Length: 114
Image (cartoon, rainbow, N blue to C red; front, side, top):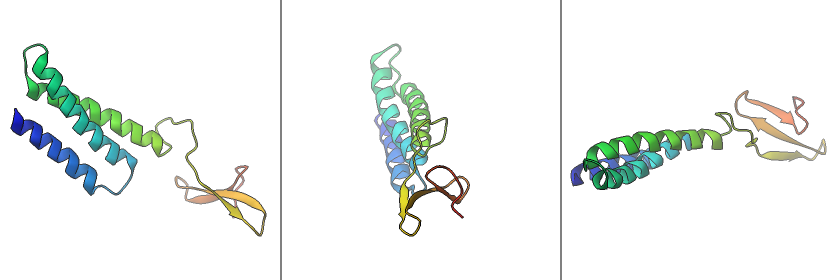
């Protein structure tokens, strides 16, 4: 029981420390670690008392929720908020932003900048 928890927590910590690609991976690893911990506690105290199976279920649910949260923070997965930083072009006197999906720059009103 303790070895399973230590292993699951270690994997979560290592995965979240090694990723540098974005919010999806970082939040999925953190969610899996927290879900495994919560699942082990709940599984140990409820039903047949299996902390291992509770940790597995908690890790799966926590990882999924974390991945969706990270995807929404990056502006995907049905997110309705635009996660974009605007820059000011002094020569044109207008704001513009970079769209990472298309790799292009757009003016604040959505017209292509170049």
